[in-house]
Amino acid sequence: MTRRPAARAGRLVAGATWAVWSLLTRHTDSDVPTWDALTTSLSLVAQLMLSFKWIGNWVLWIAADVLYVPLYLHKGLTLTAVLYAGFVVLCAVGLRQWWPMRDAPEEAAGTREPASVGAR
Image (cartoon, rainbow, N blue to C red; front, side, top):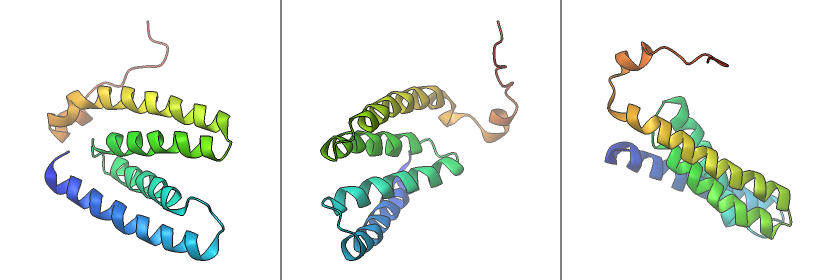
């Protein structure tokens, strides 16, 4: 992720975290509003980045999922924490697969043959 998109993503995460934190502290009885707000904001910005095909989205997904695991353990949601630990692995695989395409021109990226499911 270059500096400009990284800075933009950082500002979006900071602003969204503040907005979600404000809502959580005023309208819920959450015992961890800061962590809830941060993980929600990381997920929302990562999804936005994914829609624009910014490779840095994987970094935000990994950060969010790494934070979700202890958050869910704190809430007593062990199976959900295990699920999010699996998501960390899936994100690492996604980042590894997308990394070689980071320097590919967009025209070339659209001309690649998709792998068929079940191909031998």
